[in-house]
Figure 1 (cartoon, rainbow, N blue to C red):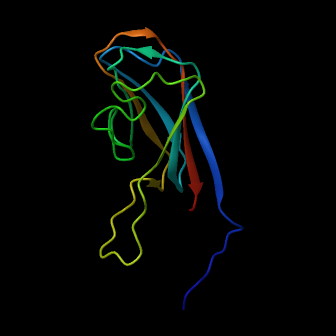
Figure 2: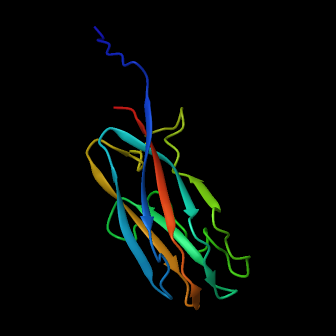
Amino acid sequence: MANFLYNKGSISFSRKVIISDALVKNDDTDTIIEQPAGSVATKVYARYITAPDVGSSGTIGLTLGTGSAGSTELLADASANNLKAANASQPAAGAIVTANLPALTAVGQNAPAAAAAFTTDDRNIQVRVKMSNHTVTKNCDLEITIFFDQIA
């Protein structure tokens, strides 16, 4: 016979990190955000606290992963340009870039795989800001916020 356990509803919350002087020419800036046990990462916001000034064809990218630094299970950016594309205008202070993190398995799918965004244990999410090989005339401060739903 089945047993039932009910909760009073889900809990949504966020964790963030502020990276001062986030850009390094032709290099990566790595940090972590802790993901609590029993939660699923649902979306990320990257907010420019201050505006950068980088070479006109310079690119800025963001990746998120659950493995080692630079892993991309949650947010990949093969072109390293999801925060600023080449030849795009410089991001303004207060500009926000958002992305939904990997969807959970769709209903009706055969042999669903474990969801990369869910964890049963506390873990670190690897955050990487990638800067192309272009001059950084004015650096910036970036706020990276990841949203979670507590489901277990």
